[in-house]
Image 1 (tube, one colour):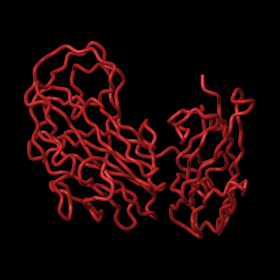
Image 2 (spheres, helix red, strand yellow; image 1 turned 180 degrees about the vertical axis):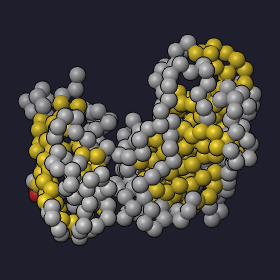
Image 3 (cartoon, one colour; image 1 turned 135 degrees about the horizontal axis):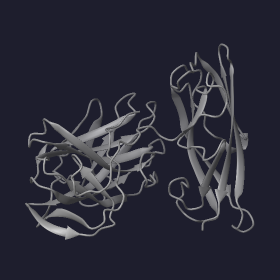
Length: 361
């Protein structure tokens, strides 16, 4: 699964000199998707994806944008028309609402693509606000509307055009619909210089202005993955996508931590979420044909991928709840075992993962 690259959210910007727009203007075209016939005006699909007017349950108004991935595509995207923006260094704020009832979805994002020309021909940089495996906020798949942001973006003086891309990711073997509504990229009609002191997360759209005293790097596009601790030649047979080991074969989570506790509440238990995958692409490992995958304990009913497979394939999302002990004062533990068989030698991959739920504070 691939997505547009992002510049990660930077740390706090202290005592920063930045240009600030005088009067806020939302530069997202048709941001609430209220101009809608067969599809929202100023928006269209990318590749084989499907974009439509969703009138069933908008966040506000009469419509939202309904986005569905194309056949055998693990990434769905809807992109806006190119929009000219004011020149100069200034802050812009972005936010949006999303809704999905599909637990196959692992990430949603709104990406701002920057260009040095008003016609969006010369790429200058990108920045994204999202939820899921590559972002800090937890992704909700409960069928309700959830709002991300506002987050501050620093637009540099080489940016003259922007395009917006709403997207989501899921396994290529799945199909889902995600609705987006009330998109905003609020900037002003012209820059004015002011002095600001802020702890608001800030991302640079197009380059790194000298006023930002922090470095930027491109974040990974891959979800956290537990491959096990056995021989490299067999580690691709069975892997867990969406979870990582904090030490050896142990994965720790603090009750209520949004990065690992899927229910997002300090309620006396941690809900770990991941997918059991087979035949993943790992260096030094080649799966000829994975004929069986067993996930234990069986009473947890962790979904395994359809078999046999020779190409990367994942099962539906598994959720394992680990309660705290001693009325929430002591850590809770759960041990999992995964065994996969290949059609030729080496035939066996056996991995163990210990989940540990820790009390908050």
